[in-house]
Length: 102
Image (cartoon, rainbow, N blue to C red; front, side, top):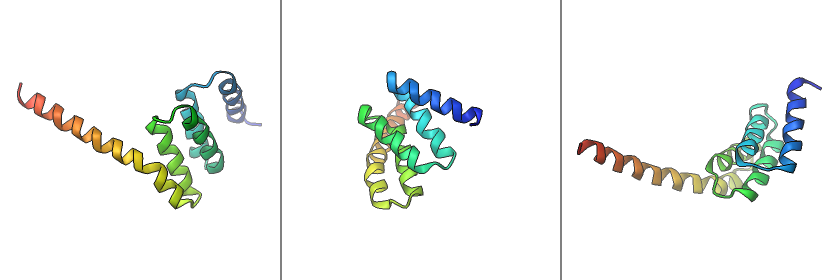
């Protein structure tokens, strides 16, 4: 087993004892970057069950599903991310107005 494989196993063991959003995202993202899309999707789903509002985890799941050819499920997962980005645009617009008035 490679050093990276050992690190992934240690991360998975740690997450079983103490799940946290950041580490769960890191695990899912690492699987995704390695092309391990089923594992990335499974890790993302587990993370979303604990942190359903985490848009970064939702994005990794959507990307993994697209890579697996599960387009309808990916669309369902990614739509809330699009809504969140739209709200973020409103925040940027408000900040622009704030700074323009200074």
